[in-house]
Image (cartoon, rainbow, N blue to C red; front, side, top):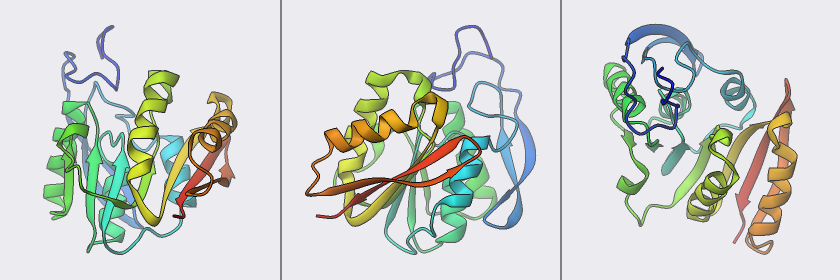
Length: 205
């Protein structure tokens, strides 16, 4: 990764150095494509692993969202566990999106749509949102992202966000409680594991 590249860079300039790696997703070994210039190119990062282990079973149908998908461990897990659902995998990093498209195609997961945020149809509501949100983009960008996507939960749907405790999970929970109308959303700590919190944001009305 060059000095100017971050995993949230839209078009990394560093050499891609694409490679295949084997990981366990949804209880099975799968081969995925990763590369330099994206988040966690060497495999499943600790936070995502906590989310995949602790989050409840995803809805079996409807539209599901992976916000900040990277090379796709969350999106691929959702698609493997809920083959009747449509999975939107959203990221600004074009290299990550291309990698995920390649992996999804190789696994026959035709319901995974890897796309930029603006390419998600505006009328889609989500039965679930799973995310390891990009905390390091800064609070302003992170807050705008969450206030853009959480209101697109369908009534009865829930978002599960994994955040490292020492990177502000508890303060983020308090902020969400203050920002989302209490008559329509319930925010709580769903799980804690290995220094991470999984926050649940449920749309109740």
